[in-house]
Image 1: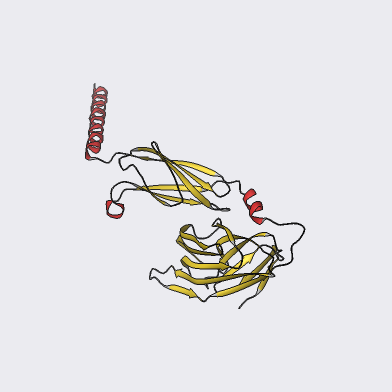
Image 2: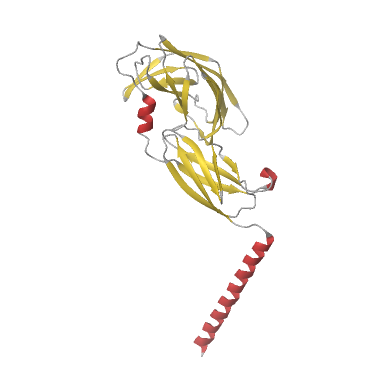
Length: 280
């Protein structure tokens, strides 16, 4: 069933399908406008922790934005053509609701009387620990497009200009030979409430790397010391954090153990002398 809903807190036109919907923040859209559309999810009362699917548009798709999404992990966001994109998103915690945001995308409307979207191969993954999935039938959604206006609207520019806050980032170094072999892997977890995380810049000694992956393997497997990580959002804001790697060789830990032993002996001797002084 397809319907159009108007919200009192701001005029919002929403074309709703079973389980997923496409929405825009304006009741009337014009040819030539650059608009931001959002894929919204109705979980039907179920708690979910992942989504996958694809979007096909009659007009070219521009920027894909994950800012403000309930899904913080995006192993796949891939444009298959100028008018189609495939995506897989997830979250460490379960989410549910009748209108939760998956992602947003930019479209510059052409002179056609309508813009059409097809949501297909949509699957929701239920957070029940059993691998339960909910498949959503293919949906075709059409929105009317009015003739070009004298004033062209660029929602993407307005949205990017309003983003002045950097992402939030945390980094977890992992050294697990069973999972990753030799060396250290950094798990990069960053969120941005508006335009979304664009990329990371990692400095390990003299090696500087730019990556969009959230799983980064250090190029220098022998490197020990401070690593600088910068996270950038799509509006250009950035935040810097550091992690420090320590040697893991047996000799290193033998030296640490010996140093601790020396400290304990010296502390013991000091306390023993103090005790004897009080007895005198």
